[in-house]
Length: 131
Image 1: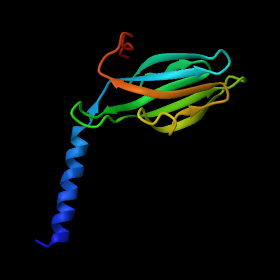
Image 2 (image 1 turned 90 degrees about the vertical axis):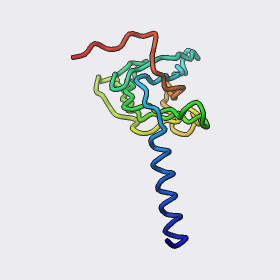
Image 3 (image 1 turned 180 degrees about the vertical axis):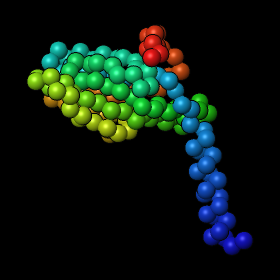
Image 4 (image 1 turned 135 degrees about the vertical axis):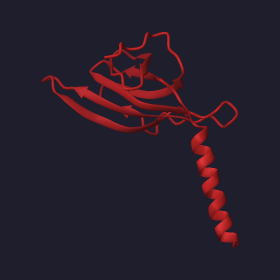
């Protein structure tokens, strides 16, 4: 086996190992800033549950953490909609948020900011009822 083939094989094995190490969590923890009042609120949202923060609706689709034994990495794929004054819903954000870099992909709205704080296995908030 050539050195290049070995290197490609080794890199693929490392990538597969890294992907299997991520821990999927049922709860995403967010912080939200109301720029009018200056209040920061922390709130939990279960995966695929929509939580209202002011005029924004936050829906996490997946939330991952690295294992305790590795460098902390916490990320979530999130959708954020705004309820406009004429009661229409407008998508203002779809993408990944990173807890270790809250300014990287946080939602920066005219009135509200939202960023990911953590991914958790459980919450004090009861889970949504199954349909």
